[in-house]
View 1 (cartoon, protein in one colour):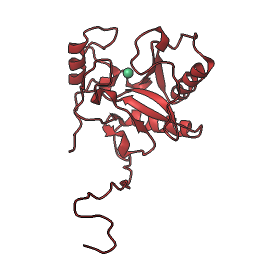
View 2: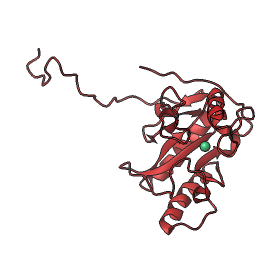
View 3: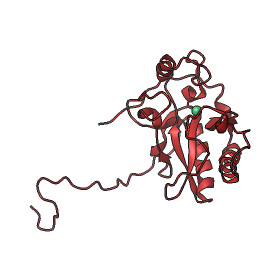
View 4: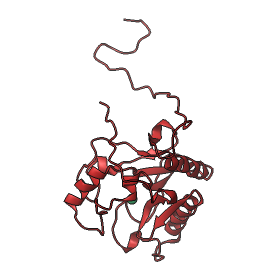
Length: 211
Ligand SMILES: [Zn+2]
């Protein structure tokens, strides 16, 4: 064994953060699906449907990945650069969702109030919707008043009966996302649709799970 090594034979080498070159959007069509982490290192992820920590209490993704169409990814990176200039960044709860997973969710909760009917599909199935919150550059979550997927009035954008700090946090999220072409929906402070995604096709592309 090399004399400078600090490892004994039973110890695994410590994980060294991978320095990977980011990919370029060059020559990619706007509707191509991309893995966001290949194009930016500046996002945080807590992909809840790859865990049981969600309103379904079920893990419906094989592994945690965040894919969107190219145009959505570009708009998200621009929005995130704006947040970074404010000392914040985007943390994802959900991104593109294959239509077959929408069917799986509908099987568990067949209620259009909580899950979009898979036949019609959701903008998540089109690669144009994301569920997000904001964290500080050190990863601390901003208080948005409720957890992700809290279904009730407390999560509504038009519920003003909340402490000023929460209203301010939601406002900075909404105003910035709108500036980069996203729409909000009234009942979920975390959900944003890319406006130009509404006419895209529902997809069932499945991402690769390494390991
Ligand atoms: Zn959503």
